[in-house]
Image 1 (cartoon, helix red, strand yellow):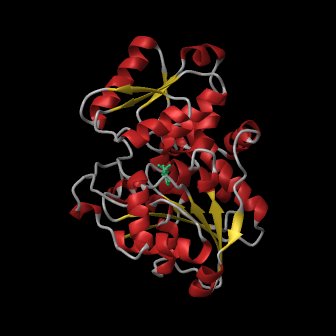
Image 2: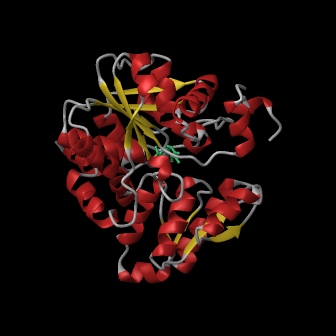
Length: 339
Ligand SMILES: *Cc1c(COP(=O)(O)O)cnc(C)c1O
């Protein structure tokens, strides 16, 4: 009984997600859900793509970041926020904070490429460069939280972030009455946990499937270990799915464990093939981490025959050189390249 209570307390509820929807609606795109014709034929079912890469910052993370910023108390708004994500979460926080007139500091190491720094600055974020590793940047973010009172916004393990991402699940249920399967890219699990909470509450019979890369699948390994475990980070085309889930994970591990039906792994070549197919068939430009759902369907790792499957295409922030090589037919393997 005690265990059950602890378990449900970790979960973000449908009411939290509905509250997030009302809050963020004026500030984020209701991304279109479009038919995927060649892919539907290939799997023998009906597939539709939720185009989250069309969000202003190029990824769905704007939803969670916007909900977190809009949920700050007046006192916390005045202090400002801090994060150390250099990727889609950093962009989302910078953009949402700027729009709301809240200070946002994004901590990064000296090794972060200039394009990423420019991306964050363009969206109104204050960049602080510290040290030679992402770990040192994280230490600085924690110091700013402690010494200057900035509010830290986790990329995934944060109730308002999970609820914000969950608004995608509400839109899917509203937009497609027959939908019975949802395929979601998986890293820290904020996206999958939020969508699963919304969809399972509204349509309990629907299957929820998470997809991640073979190289460093933190949530996948943690689910099999029965608790959060560390993974070795490896170079991957799905760079936005890299990193751990936090050994002190408070929400997303329990939610993914309790709500998700299946987790699937895809290889680097499969990710490249899916990026190519999305461009060739529908002229959709997306990053590796966003193509894993399509990759899992193309390889038959998910049974979508006679099903109605929604796939989240989660972001488009991809290096142009790597992208053009992939689209031109090369199975780029980042482990074999000088970085
Ligand atoms: C962050 C991210 C994901 C995974 O989201 P989590 O909430 O960490 O599981 C998937 N795709 C893209 C493009 C992302 O930026």
